[in-house]
Figure 1: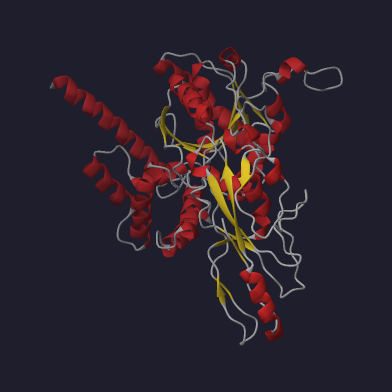
Figure 2: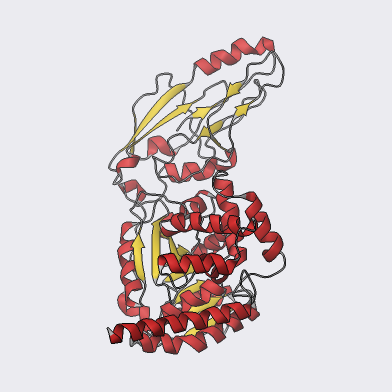
Length: 493
């Protein structure tokens, strides 16, 4: 990691500024006993001036770090600050460069770029590397240097899996009762497992209850399993500190100690594609749920490494992405680390997923892939489909008919987008454009929002979308007939 400083305020100060810039020095701290090779060592370049000092009291006090060089012996220690800024001398600006952060597994993304321009013609312009703003320094310090007792031993904080026998009483908590959340809840409830669905909207919870009532029995019959109890609540405390099912309370209205042992063992957020929203909710869940509860995000475009880098989350070792598609028909789930997810979580969670019928696919540890596996492939198809529609080249029915015929697929991209929800599709496209402007089309996104999202035509969740509700019913009937035809042809072969 490197620190970059910039510019002076007057010609008279330039020699003094250059002198202080010349005193930049490198401190190399070796991480002893680290279990992960990518975090063996840090090279930290620090700027020292009369009162511009990088400070961290934990560096010499922690046995995991060994000071290899400090030629000028000017490190002053405090317990309060990482970096102290002083603007009286040439208005120094100190930033932390992002070069090397991905290799360290910190999962941080640059949010400022480019040229720090001089304020006057005589001042030299200084080009800076991709930068992380100063507001993220606290998070960078927390994730770069040891703080907890387990970390001092060279290991991440330990996570212990819940006891197997407790899973019959401890529910899976699904946050968000929308189109995906209710489907995820249905599958988790299909093996006699309890599930709690939390949402702030009573209407969304009623709709989710109707969906699960209509479909859970049939799904369990197909798998030869028994349904678990599904409860819904708008009270987050009930959702996070109890089984959610008629929780036992003491005389003063508090949850009983026995009830609190039945708190969720897995929490899955299924919220709209908004980084601040998902991060704040996960941070709230982290504070409210037991230490052995796994925290999962169902985001299709945002990584939990990005969420952890936002700052409020302090337990990234029990956080991961679990990207569901459209269960129960699609049972694949992609699992990806936050960059710090402890290894036992993957094997434990994958095992539990298989028991309820999911098929997990695990992205290798150390790999960060925005879009995971399938969505990176699907994104190209989706973008071109939207462009074709926006340009008037073809209608949704024609696009899907061509797709189904060529790939022998049951459904085409337009019908799939209607299932996901066109508002979610628009949010993902926006996020992808921000991440890489070369991928995607602003014109196609504007067309989708103007013609569908802003009019409330979001697809299956509202009735009309790229297809009307009547057209979608006809497509479903066609899919049923095709499946029947395939059975007849196979039987007569």
